[in-house]
Image (tube, rainbow, N blue to C red; front, side, top):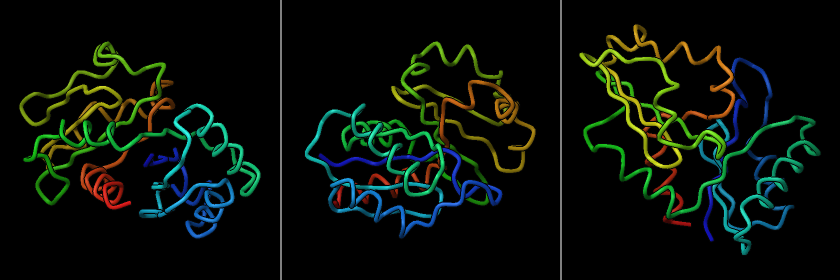
Length: 180
């Protein structure tokens, strides 16, 4: 089975520094195959014979704590789930000079369509948001992105139960998973 481990909060603002080559070694030492990291924000594509996702997450979190002395939360997605998330992203949504687009991957305990009621109200004139199982998709006109109330979730408990990647990274991660 092919997976991606999405690590929350590493290499942000000089905190929780994790070197990708060492992280790759950690995953290999845990018995995972075809390990590949993507960018410095903690995306690890790998294969595993196990389908017990809770056990895999626990194993990865313990391995990171042992090797890096950091308590890092991990979201795990398999190839089929990433395919569904990627397909839910409208093709016109990009992360470029004119548009900002993020995918907020959700921990299981908040992964429900009701999550939309807990998020700040958006400005429909320049942004859109939608739920898909496992994630919330958000896009804004780049010029107005900083005016979005979505940034206010950073100071909430809800924010601690998600990890965010831009849509370009999500599409690339999915492509790497397909190639694994």
